[in-house]
Image (tube, rainbow, N blue to C red):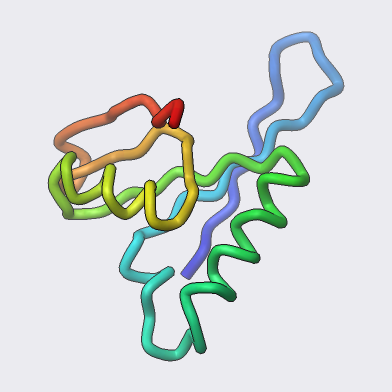
Length: 89
């Protein structure tokens, strides 16, 4: 399941949208292909929506998942045990 949280910058009319999702949700067997997931993630990026992965995987596993999904935003690993900046690659 995808969750959206809107964050408004102080004294600004700009709304920043952040989607928090578990990577297992993105790899669900009901999603026909990884390509469809990546296309959806690119659509969010085109609209300046940040995607923050939040899961029980280790940092190394999350970095690999982010690389495979072309996600470069910060992520949370190990059930909230670590918060890491996104990849610049």
